[in-house]
Image (cartoon, rainbow, N blue to C red; front, side, top):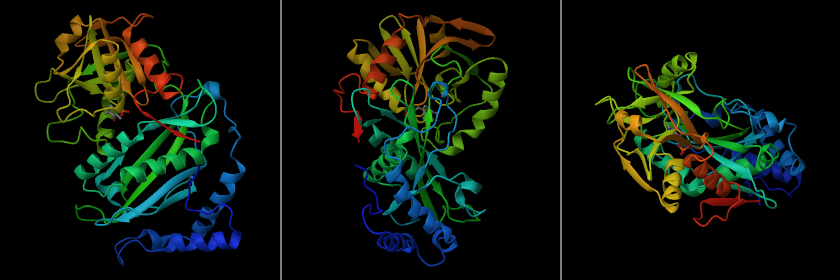
Length: 397
Ligand SMILES: *Cc1c(COP(=O)(O)O)cnc(C)c1O
C-alpha cells in the first residue's frame, strides 16, 4: 500500500486544507531556514496534483522503449522531499512532482559540498505483482554514518525506507518489465540552508528521486577493461573515502575521462600511502579470485563499503569459496585467475583486463567464470526468482 501524507479519499477542499497545513507548518526557527518562506504559491498546487495523479496512473507502464535502457537519467513523475533544521530531527516529508528545486546561491551543498547520496534498485517481481527493493536499511544506515562525518542531521532508518517505498510506488509505471532493468532510486541529503563562512548549513533537505535503468557500462554485461591510476587518488586516510559524499566524485572525473579517451571502461585506484594496494574503481568495489580463494580490499577508511560487496562476500562463502578481506596489492593482479567489480549500479561486472604501467593483464570472464555464478545468484534474489533466505529484499505492492 502506498501510504502518503496526502489523504486519498477526502474531498478536494479537505485535501487542500490538509496540504496547506502540512506544508506551511514551519519546521525551523525564525530566520534560520529559507525554504518555507521563499516557496511560491504554485508549490501548494503542485503538491495537490500529486494526490490526483498517483491515483490515475497506477497500473500503466510509462511510454518507454524498455529494450534501450542504459544508465541515463530519465525523468519520472514524483520525488520525495523532507526538510529539517540543523539541530532538529527530520519529521515530516512528502511526495512532490519531480522537478527542479529552489536553492539559495549560498546553500551549504553548493558552496562547501555538504552532501551525501545513496543508490538502490527496485525490481518488478517476476512471479506475480509487486516490487522488491534490495536491503534499503543498509543504505539508510550508511547515510546515517555519512551524515555524522559531514555534520548533517539524517533521516531515521524507518524514515529513509518509507521515503524510498513511497518514491518507488509513486513512480511504479517507470519500473521496467522483469528482465529489462530496474528503477534506480537516488536518495540525497544536503545542506540546503544558506551559509557564507565555512560552517554546517542551517537547514537540510532529504530528497529521493528515481529513474529506470538498464546496464551501467556501455559494454552492457560484457567484460570491462580497467586501467590503474597511480597519479591521483580517490581517497586518503582520515578523509571521506568511506562515505558516499558528493565531494568524492568530481575529483575522480579527470582520471575517468582520460581513461575513457584511451578506450578503458573505468579507472582502478590505488591507496595514497603505499601506492600499491588496490582500493576500488570510481564507483564500484573490486574482487580478485585465485583458485578457490576470493579476495577484496579490506575496509580501512578509504574504500566505500558497498552493500553489493557485502552481499557478494556472503554469497561466495555460501558457495564454498574462502573470502578474504585483506590488503590486495598490484602484484596480486599478476597471479589472479579472475577479477570482478561490484556495486548497485554495475551489480557484478567481470573484468577482462587491467592495465598497469603499460602492461595489460587478462582474466577469465568466460561462461565458467565465478563472477557469472555470483551475478546470477545475487540478481535471482533481487528479482524474486530465487527464494530470499537471507531476508535481504523488502517487498512492496
Ligand atoms: C556506491 C559505491 C560503491 C558501491 O556500493 P553499493 O552499496 O554496492 O552500491 C562502491 N564504490 C564507490 C566509490 C561508491 O560510491
